[in-house]
Image (tube, rainbow, N blue to C red; front, side, top):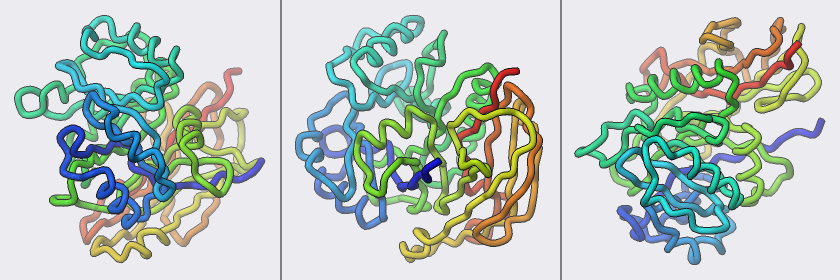
Length: 324
């Protein structure tokens, strides 16, 4: 099985075309300086900046908009036709999601437990999704310091409950990037696993659709089995040898003041049960797991950030085991 290449991306960005301080050119330049290979331009309820952004190659741009409603914020990516957000109702969101998919688009849930109205109008997710298979990705981390954001713990719990119910939803980080001022952990990103050595908008979209994502405060962290299977894949149950990779090279190249010291690798499965914990030692480690049928398994990297211990440094999307 061919190896994926992992590309650091920011999937939630705003410009002067909505409420951001960035011009499109400034956003692209700042993303380039932060060694981001791709971004999603998601201005509130508009795609006005995409014509200027679409010609960018470093970073690559996947276009969209953030549906900004009274009942939740929903990034909609690469939709071939306009789907009207203005009449989205709390109990009718599934139909809107079907319309987005019918137009080839992706739909995510942004910062589901953010403080809502009046602090952030509609920032708290209130839509009653009946069929969560219609949601492609969920921001389990938002803003710049994931371990300081208590709403992220609720988002991870929601994601875990959906995985337990059999839904395969990709986890993402969204900086909700409006400006350079006030940014923390500037290395935080979503790594997208794509085939080929060059990132493309189509590759970004495929990675989100296939659940090949890693949410990180900076280090790239992922795993693959002895057969080369990795996050997002469906594999047989039984004994499986895994190789974990921890790569801090991008963080080192950024030369930020932030420090990351990996301490533990953990693997979680259904019900949030931890089924493996081992010390993080070096860039590559191996372990053997006994995988149960019809389960999900995700890996997490824990350690120190800027001297603070007990921090979640990275969370992978799950790998899934086949039903018996």
